[in-house]
Amino acid sequence: MRVIAGLAKGHKLAAPVGDTTRPPLDRQKEALFSILGDVVVDARVLDLFAGSASIGIEALSRGAENAVFVDVSADAAAAANANLAHTKLADKARVTRENVVTFLEREAVLGAVYDLIFLDPPFRIDVNDLAAVFEVLRYGNLVADDGLLVLRLQAKIAPPERPGFREVKNRAYGDSRLLFYKPIKGGKV
Picture 1 (tube, rainbow, N blue to C red):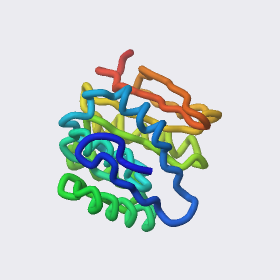
Picture 2 (tube, rainbow, N blue to C red):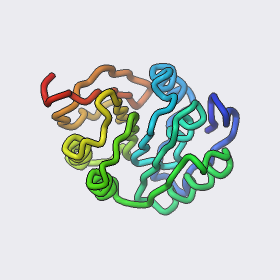
Picture 3 (spheres, one colour):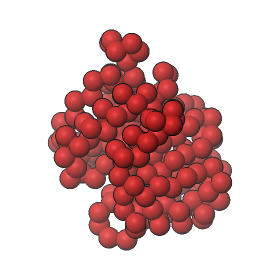
């Protein structure tokens, strides 16, 4: 696993200890950022279920303004911090070891807004738990009006209910797929 392009191109990234995370393959990451294009430049990025932080680090390397990485696992937070230090991108990042919904609820109270949000939950996540994440993102107004949400799911799993968001792209890559969502302005499609 490595950074594909930008300032930190070629840097190898460490994965958290154990088998609880499944970082995207380089070809999946390359496809994702090819689709995103210039959306990444100057974006305020939120990487939820961050694991090794490889997605958010790729965004920083390609010109994102800053990134926040959230994962409940101590091993994931340690790997994210090590990878940020190794790529020399730590000054543009914050790593939080916390439950994703708890973090989002606090960010909503603080009035935080993100341009680009990555959700890469464990494949074994309960779809209802994932729906709760979408609920807080919607009611917390955490996604910029022209923002984009990218969800990586196991290909055979149906995506959760996500009122307030419309799907704009859906791409399959091996055993996973990438789903792209935009917020619905005014609650209507």
